[in-house]
Image (tube, rainbow, N blue to C red; front, side, top):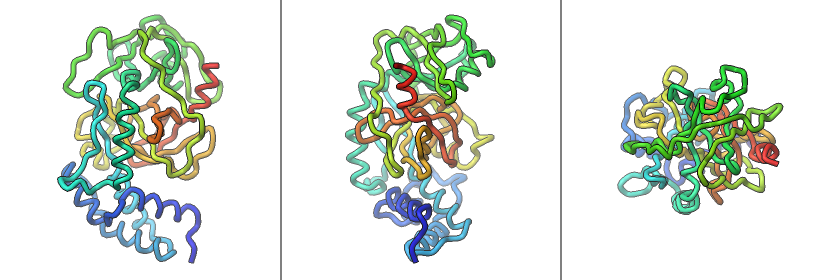
Length: 314
């Protein structure tokens, strides 16, 4: 019996996430890295789901949910340190991730290094974390329109210096005066999508490169931004995956999900409140494929394709 497209994609996605590991092995290794507290016992049902899909049959909803939990446990979140992206979390034998993913991550670390300092945490006048933004052009910051709405109390107009972006916020690192940049005005608002350009003196920080080709379902992607603590909406082992540390710059690995069609891109990177406006990079060439706009940890996330942002810049 042949699986329908949706379930075939789920099986392939699970294979990509697990590599040579069974769900039982993978979860045991993840538990050894992030601890066992509040992680559901899902591996047995996930294994049944994998076996059922391989046989060409459809698992039960409970089994599919268990498999989804296991896949999401394989979506790690890494810190940056002094502008460098950290390694993937691994077991002692370094046998958790597929070898091709480890190699791709090493290449991505090198390619993204010149651009990490162009991704900042957007704050209001009181220093409260509202979202993420990144340099998209000369003295231009890209983020979500709903981030602007929060900053402007819905007016979508800004007083110069009424908010700012901080191009650092790394764990156990102090921000310098030059890391904090005032946001002066609204440059452009997309008429229908959740995108805006804000004007700010970014002091020569380079603009992030945009992808020239749209991504496809299954492509590996990475969001880099500032996830906030949001356990009310994301109670399921959120603290363990993020190690209880929020509001600092993190990279989250995932992939493009099925159902993606321009201008929307769906992905499963581990994101939370505060990631709004994060660039979504293709791991293969470190170009921005989309701008993350919504979603919760363990749910399907939505982003807006970067060519829509390019249209605002032209």
